Length: 223
Image (cartoon, rainbow, N blue to C red; front, side):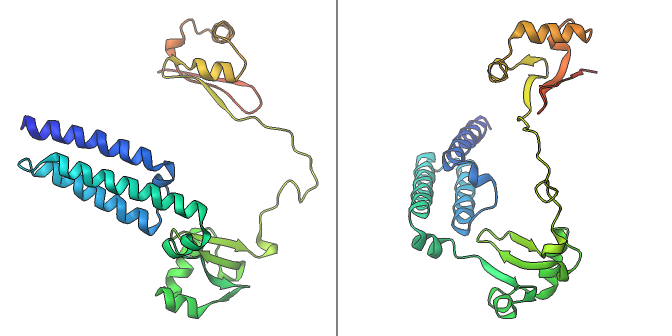
């Protein structure tokens, strides 16, 4: 039992490290080669935890090999558009100028019901609202609506928007983020004074505190 526990914890830490090495892109929509590598790593990790009689080193070497293969393929994809087209494929236009591309649907083995369902999931009620529908290489459907169906923007209204900063978290669950304080060009004394103004004597009583995009301080106490 103890051996299984130790092996499981070790493999867990190692696989988390391997996925972190692959980059944050792996946590979003996966390309086909990325999905294959993730599945293989999961299988190797499971074997390492289940088969206590086998050497864990062999599976670790295999996982490291897959890790370097993924990094190498990702680098090639970054540098070569030709290689990217072979490894990841190319986007497919399923709706072109408001008309369904039936040949492309047949090639990808997608029926019209599936296409319409995905369009509705993108919050477009009707196919008549869509100018282009593009199936990306990661399987995500991108929609370009017709001009009269596009949301109105500030630019369309000829309004000059004010600049908005990014919200900055200062206290999370009773812990001050000193790095973010420096980014916000504030110090701890200023923060404590702001809390006292709100009748909060101890920052450890604060659940969440942040500066919004307009530099306004928001504070929520713990229950």
